[in-house]
Amino acid sequence: QVQLVESGGGLVQPGGSLRLSCAASGFTFSTNWMYLVRQAPGKGLEWVSTINPGGGSTYVVNSVKGRFTNSRDNAKNTLYLQMNSLKSEDTAVYYCAKSLGSYNSMDYWGKGTLVTVSS
Image 1 (cartoon, rainbow, N blue to C red):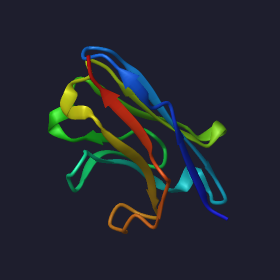
Image 2: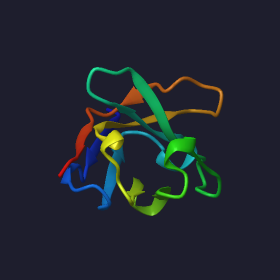
Image 3: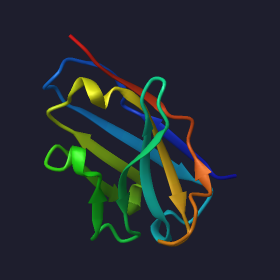
């Protein structure tokens, strides 16, 4: 069965850093596009990042450019999101998701990990 398990969330002060990990299993990780999507308290889902299967092309939402870096290690079946210079508005549940192609819907999602940025 497909599994996406996020980890690395927690409480961090503004300006701090966290690295989220998404451990994938049950599918061919190296051929799938991977995504991070977040949901702030009381808000809708917001796309955060995309990475292509080989890891050579990454995209992030404008609000996190220069602060967040998306990467993957296909040998470890793991997606990473390095989050630096965190702001209170980054507080959200962060979900890992996959798709078979760049135009395909995200067909599987993880359960999410909560990131709280607060003093």
